[in-house]
Length: 196
Image (cartoon, rainbow, N blue to C red; front, side, top):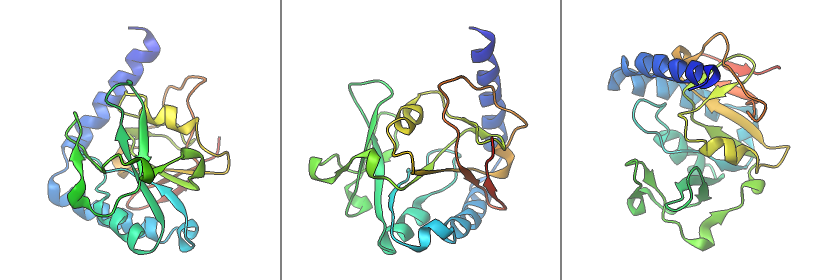
């Protein structure tokens, strides 16, 4: 393992340990504050085409945020990972959560009906999960590369916002030339505008 990969792996392990210290009640309380902050975002005061995600494990809880985005009339799509191609995912709109299936990571996904598939270039806003972030907008994911591939398919005008707990901030993330920075980060206590 090279130094770059080792540094990122160590950072990922450190933040996962920090997140693991949060109990369910803390996650729900912090996530509620973050949901309020996200829904107040100026960009979401008019209808948008939004990509979000279904939270998993110790991530920021997104269920209430997703439900409210749908209720407010945004076109909301959620990811479905490819069963055949490593690191690839597509996005689909859905009617209700009862139709969700669980993928190989046990994460709920909407049914991949071709009529509901959304081209990533249509998104005006993408809400992303992350393991760690810094104030430049550098994002450390979980290591699968799914979002790295997605970010390269977006319209250049699409706003990229990471959702995280404050404890996921680090001084600096080791980055490579192919890493795509986020525009903003939302946490339960802050709305960070990232500047490189």
